[in-house]
Length: 590
Image (cartoon, rainbow, N blue to C red; front, top):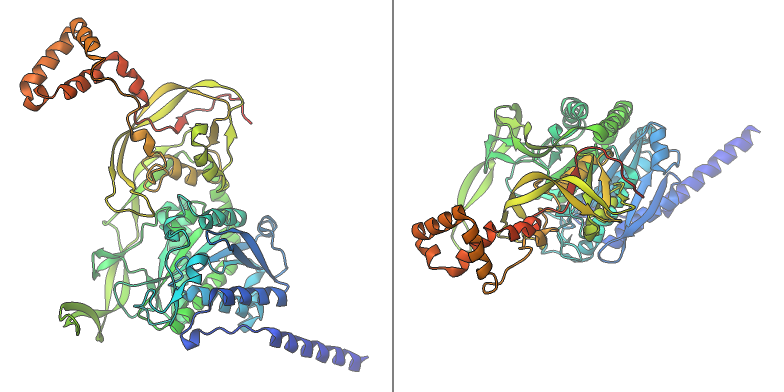
């Protein structure tokens, strides 16, 4: 019997070795090469076939027509997010290749997944309390278009992908407005997972320093208060310390300087608006990170540093899963009744901490081709100094929670955008005259440079009024009692920096609602002046005081038109169509 057991064990061991030989995953980052898109997908397919703890899923279409994939690793083969959460486990979501010219995360994720699945260094222990969900390549269109000349200031890999996607969109500017199929499918995937931790992998240029990896962590002030304290005081310090103690790649916050270009003036936490990945995901009470590897560092080192960061994140998450889950569940419930929502933030430069930074002196040389004077970071002159680090933001604009927003069905695409992000929407069953809070757009500045095909609305000034408006069967009611409340408010408050209004989806309301005939209305204006002595006095005085006005008949008629009762029809002019129901009322909905 003992011999039979030994034989069975040996046969199983041989079978296991044979199966491992069947895996043909040939990562090439040590050769300064990043895998091509088809090689990436093949690697994950092999892992999913080989390991029952892995699953490879198509989540929906992208702009290039190819599917967005999700690769999940679950120790007990449970891949249902709701079931995973009931078991008290955390979901860690990783996304790669938003900018395929920044590919280290793509290769690092394959290495990380493979290391865990084959239990390298007993890494499967992290799966006791965590599940991993990886989007292998987000910008597939950009990944399929490779050249040695894309993002060519990097120290490898030799071939990189194109920054923009098949629709020529920068996908890390599309998380709020979601005009690409990539972003729409991502939103469905993110909503499906509702992860606890989110990581987005990137490469950065700019200032040179001694670090291979830097980190953008979402603003702790924007998170639920208890989540924010845990993030700032426990999670972030542990991750930085973990990289120092357990990796050859020390980590520093993303180098965004207090005074432009001057590192020694201090660093500031990045204000990640909802148009960016981490700004979007943090709206849903998710601890969100963006790794930014320095382009000047050798590609294999960049890949390894990301693998090490992934390892530190899953280590911390697994060891603190119960607290992370409890804080998120509490925040998800609290946001449903949150009364005040900040929508705009400003750095508080009166508060700072300090960090040790390892940099290089900035020097100048003459360039060999043009002879121009060029600045560079001199690696022969390293320095170490303690510099300020500003991490505190304060809200400068807040809004009170309405009971609900009303979106007329003429703007149905806005309601559908919200619903694609897990927002619950209702519709009126019958026509109704409702007293609502309405915004008027008083002033707006249009950006001079196109972003994502938009000339964004900035410096938006509004005033709010209460009035009765007629609504109709089919108009949308968005109640503000949901886990997605922060997203709802950020998208529908017109003066929020990444709102749908800021992205020009409502620009037609800025056009005049009606007009008058220069010839047909003058007799009516004469009647108005005859009836209103104060208006006639005011009109005559303006002509006396303003020479240009006195010689411009059209300007005079326009002036009188604005004073006339007929201008009441202009109440629709610059009226933001999404209104607010301040208090709960009985409505017939479906």
